[in-house]
Image (cartoon, rainbow, N blue to C red; front, top):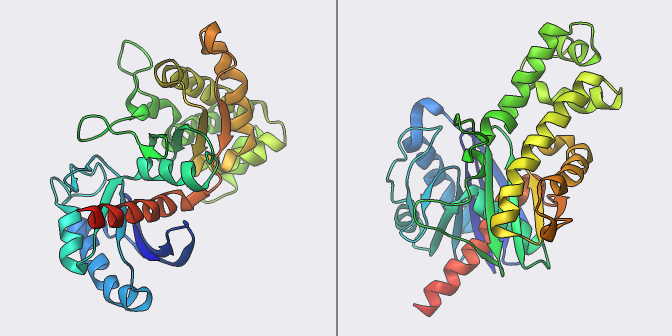
Length: 311
């Protein structure tokens, strides 16, 4: 059974053909023109549909969107990155384009579904997914189903307050926050290995230099990673105390740090937990990588088809 999956983010648009086992059969990636806004993205999607539908004869479509979504009605509440999405009826628009059943959800929720059904959370009852990238997001899957709160969203761990002043997790733990801290080290400690790696490379995305600096045992890289892991562990302790998932899956662009960040989180998290919950959930790296959203969207599409048949 062939299906289509669409991933819409702040800087990327991807459309995938796949099947109900979560297997991806074709990938298409598009450059997002921010100036063209949501309307420009929709033009790109509409232009891609005829060829993909002719090639694969999909039976349903799943959409993972980077922002708050009213999943029942299929509406996008808003985008924090691209204009032209507020209150847009995405599911009905896709149905009008394709005449196929459609389901849409927040991209972190969709990634959580992908990891729970086909990735690092497979076989676990309650799976919490944390995505670390330009922002920080989360999703919860229980018994194979996305947990939904009141519309338009839930599990926004990136907006959890870390203190009474209003500092949120995203301000400390996002990719941009790590980049900023590295730039501060470059200024304050110009002779460090981390500073040298940054200066010798093209500007931007400074976090990509942390693995090499850690391998060289740079103390400033170690300090940044320790602070990052401790803040994340504190934030995740709230997740554990409220939800107590079986496993916490770490995904997103910052997983380029891989085992280093996972190991530190697994070590520090129990220190923030009540004794009855010790040692806490397993902390594992995402197995699907950048495919978590499309794989989850394929599962979403399969469920949209099942709902259409029941209806």
